[in-house]
Length: 244
Image (tube, rainbow, N blue to C red; front, side, top):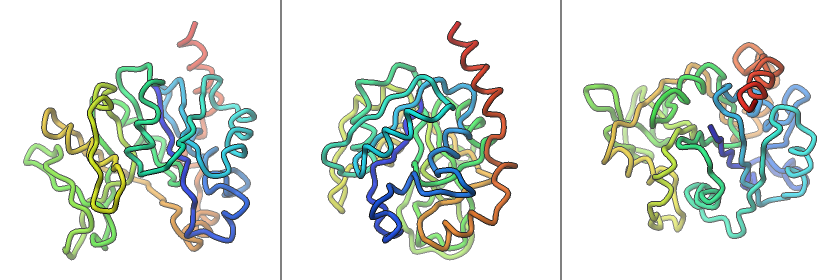
């Protein structure tokens, strides 16, 4: 399975730290955020596409040195216009029938990503207490997605979209429309899928969005090794065996 990691953003909320370092390469416990993400990917993933734009040469250099995946490519997003546009930039490069797509500046639990990758279509959701700050998932009686609503006027605990998805490759051939904020949104692909097949909502046990300096510093205090993959060597060996 291919995985697409969205790593093109400017990281403006983490300035001045991101003035000289792209956000996915900011260190947490001595490792770049992107390194933690690659280490958490499930064994089903054998190839990675990393979408880049801001300070791209630094991400390219890191990918050349990382040891998680021998098969990888960077994809330059020339004019960033949203997460949907970033995924569209990869569509001619995707080889697998299903594709895992992740925000490159959040941390996801390895076990959660493995459960997501086992779905034909779906995304990770996590309970939040401030739904007005997130895209919120509303479910059908069978637990699959009914609709996503961006920042609804609601109180109380709700399931937020975390930015980790599994899509069938065919969905990327569909055309996107500009959102009210002038971007192409990846959530439009989710809505298209929900109209034609069940979209599974996998509740994540761990999700750490690195959106602010406070969240970045908080990540330093967490036992990330226990929730993010500590089986890199084993997974690398299994991926190599799959290619033989």
